[in-house]
Image 1 (cartoon, one colour):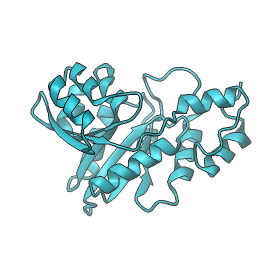
Image 2 (cartoon, one colour):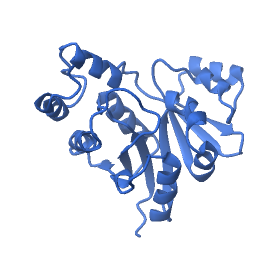
Image 3 (tube, one colour):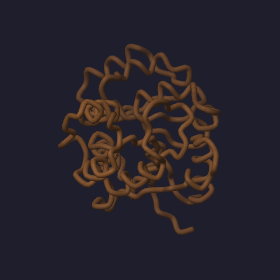
Image 4 (cartoon, one colour):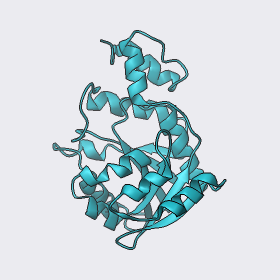
Length: 222
């Protein structure tokens, strides 16, 4: 397979995809000079509960959201397996498909702090470069609570107070962990679903095409 260079892997439920996802991916791609960011909607997320659009609907919404950005692509790799969508399996397979590329797994700070509850987190941290993006309500100092990270509270506090947009620290296995500050956008999929459930507008929180798809299919309405 021809090398594509540096690829960001942005997994998630995307229930639904919104502007905070897209802006974070854009900033990470530009900051780290990625050749592309691969959005990977989870087919059957093991830890997600509550109201979920169907896998096909979530995949379609992500495709609509990224189609105008040449840096963004969508992978349906998790739709090829009729099983729970474990990131450990997905990342291993992507490394096999892209042996000549530098792959970077992009995680929100909240997701990284929860990685201890994922299936086989050690294999994830061993096999791939890791990029953690900070966004409300998380703080970099929260990394000190992770059993996988070597970082002092003082170092985290200094980074939070500084004007730096990126910070590199170490995982306890010796691998590097890159932390990026991205533009705060207080938008979440939960907020969008709650607004829809209350019959309120979601305009300007996500791309128009995605909004139209949600409204046309009656997604998330109580």
